[in-house]
Length: 360
Image (cartoon, rainbow, N blue to C red; front, side, top):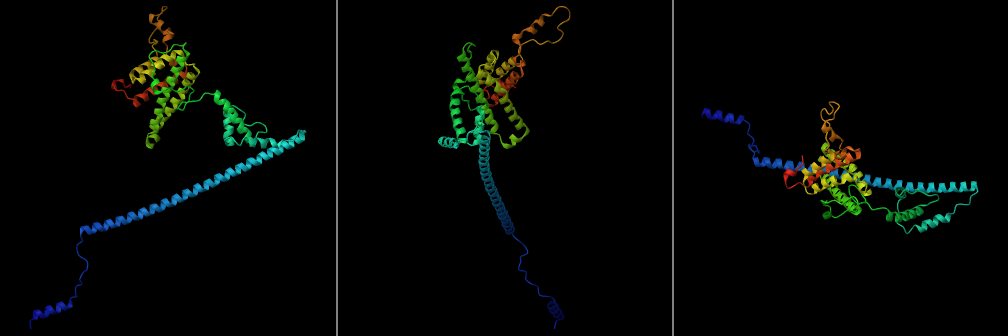
């Protein structure tokens, strides 16, 4: 027998049998990608479920808070009504005791009942709001021995008289009593009415007020259309504050136009500025504003008195007809500065066809 074969047989018997591995040595990329995608989808489903659960809990908490707030509000309103009834009852009792102490006749209860029956056909107004409305009409908030129904009837009586006597204010950024005109009638004419023509001057004031109200309305719309990031920024807040300043500074001009007390020498240059703005000639409008604000008066530059004789140019310093109106008082100065800001906004809202007319 061959020795080599015997040794090979013994060695093969001593070695353990190799187990077959069920797993493959190599994996396909598609299988790995499919497993990763399945794991990602599972994580996304779990995240969406958790998010939905959190949102449901949040909605439930908000609904509970709103319900609790409504309950509290109803309870506070009920307690306020009960407190009001107790207060009125206590006041009536004190009034009865005072009358008995002073020997006055008893308080008539049928009067209040008749007042309540008489006021049932009128539209009811909350008592606090009714008091505020009476205060705005410069009327006493409460008359002695007056119930809510009597106060309501007195308010409607006063309102009926006030509506015929008080002018209706326009709906705009600056409410005014000047009746607005159509957009086609807002154009300022070249020939202005004379100071003696009251009707023409009043119509001119209506034109100015209507156009400035249109411009300020467009300004407010532009500010409201900005995104939240721009509105909350420093520049956005400054722009809104500038708009509020213009509204505050132009209000005296509207009041003067209502009362027909606007300075006569301010009307022509102001109309000239507005006319150039309407024509989109902003450079000319700016020149008219500079002429109005700075004026054409000579300024004392250099030496004006070198001896006993005046220089010839010094006579121009006393020409008052060329002085600037913006230096007259603070209200006029702020008013004209607001007109300048309206000019700056107008060229961004209605840009001119000729770029050379852009100011600044």
